Length: 73
Picture 1: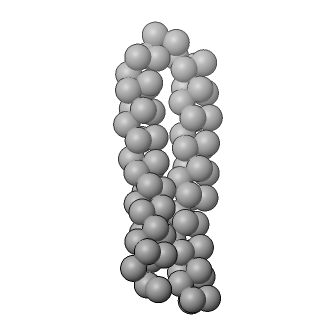
Picture 2: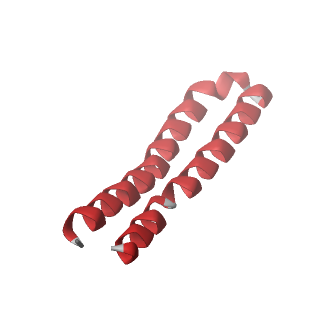
């Protein structure tokens, strides 16, 4: 039972990496928009795609944690 909790906790740690990645990407996009306001549309598209992919890794970690809790009793 304790091993299950530890495994689920480790699986959820993917959210930390996703949060850091999204934060860095957002800061760089804001900086790029401030330097070239005319390119804001292209920058926003790339930012949203990158954020979606980074968030997907956090969701995968959450799903793995749920599966560990439900099926390793």
